[in-house]
Image (cartoon, rainbow, N blue to C red; front, side, top):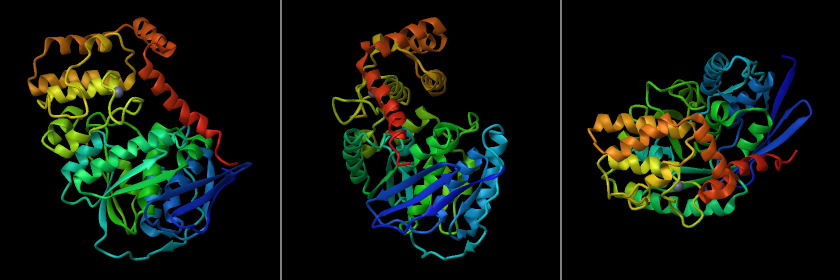
Length: 392
Ligand SMILES: [Zn+2]
């Protein structure tokens, strides 16, 4: 290790904070803003700076004292990440060792990240009496320059938050793009540190944060959010808790099936151009419609049709999460004692679909025969395109 990754934190401007990440000849500014006040100081930049330094095999130099608990946690994160990804994530030195033991006021709230999907509704409904704030991040799933999709999503999330009786904190950040430019993989390395960055910026408002999980215990593997990892991103003023590993998707749907705010606002589809909710015929929608039937909640969800379009599903490209979802639903049919010959046949067929046939379905979808997938593709490309637009 010979180089240094410097993180220079700029003075805050209103509800926007920013910092310049520089390593070698590369230099990018990360900007994060919100509809509430954000914490100043260096600590919220430790998580994203640490991972960038590890990926670049550079020492980390942050200009400002760091929270003592966060600094200790960063050492644990380094140990875990370098163990999981030895070729990509290198143990590094944190040059800034000056710590702050600033005490934050007690009685602050409890936050939960909230996208309106199965995982976030599960954790929100489970901790409804404790949670005081829901948090949405534009720049996480939705590319920063897709203002139209962000606005439509926010409309539905504001309504969901209102129905749940909780304020919605709305955050915007280009950190995902900067991390991509610094070589970090979003799924494996990066997204948990973005969540930690946002959580640590919100310590004026919250003292605890629930981070909804998307894996059941037993299926956990190295991933950017993980129960072993996320707890180390906290600080003296903020506890971070990875939540929901005890349940898979059908179990989660069953758990919130009687919550009207959840069943009236559930949003799992990110590429519906026609209205603010779900398209009802992409893999994610169909997977969730099956979850709902298996969980015995048929007819309770206002935002997804009850009738599963098997003609679409049986000729659909099944990607890796889709295949995982099919295996999960097949197992859940057994666990819940749900019998449905047509669903079982469709799931078995999706799981066993020969690669050549899956590839043909994929090629057809890419050729534009199924417009909903063109939307999905442009969503993914949006992130890639946006990467080139970060200021240099
Ligand atoms: Zn859909």
